[in-house]
Amino acid sequence: RKEVEQDPGPFNVPEGATVAFNCTYSNSASQSFFWYRQDCRKEPKLLMSVYSSGNEDGRFTAQLNRASQYISLLIRDSKLSDSATYLCVVNDDYKLSFGAGTTVTVRA
Amino acid sequence: ETGVTQTPRHLVMGMTNKKSLKCEQHLGHNAMYWYKQSAKKPLELMFVYSLEERVENNSVPSRFSPECPNSSHLFLHLHTLQPEDSALYLCASSQDLNEQFFGPGTRLTVL
Image (cartoon, rainbow over all chains, first blue to last red; front, side, top):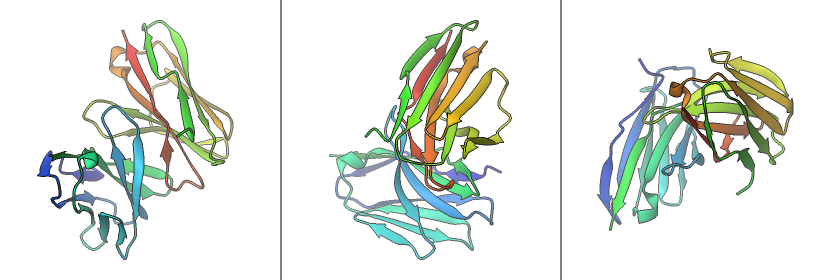
């Protein structure tokens, strides 16, 4: 079983729509969680950390479900600039395990 | 953004060449990392340096040799690479092994 699994997508959504996707992880002892965003041929950039109580940053909401071992990302009011690959990242001590990414394409 | 810089940005080398990738971080972090990203695959952690000591060597072939002379600089020395080593090589840094910040990467092609 892969350490971190994501639906690769693509999720094709119209501007203004809401899109949400999950990521599952295998190590129940994982300590911290992140969503990174990666644009085509660019480096990953930290989008947001995921806290146990859930957290929101503008149009982005992240949730953690430790019992079921998944994290989620919801994007409201999608913008064209949200088109990217979203990487789920799980931290076990110093080792970050990356999912293969979920591709989101927002169309006009 | 110039927090983590990498040079060169693109590199083409033959299998018999020796080359080095350079990474520099300007964030005052105490940990640095090398990752490999191949097409359609997750990032693969190669090496981790914390306080200039290597703490992780993720079963990387010996044709990749890292060097961390100080907390701001990280090198990846390459020799006798194979075509399957062609990939994007990303450097990252963090404070106390927490959230990592990535450089722009070196896109390596091995002929």
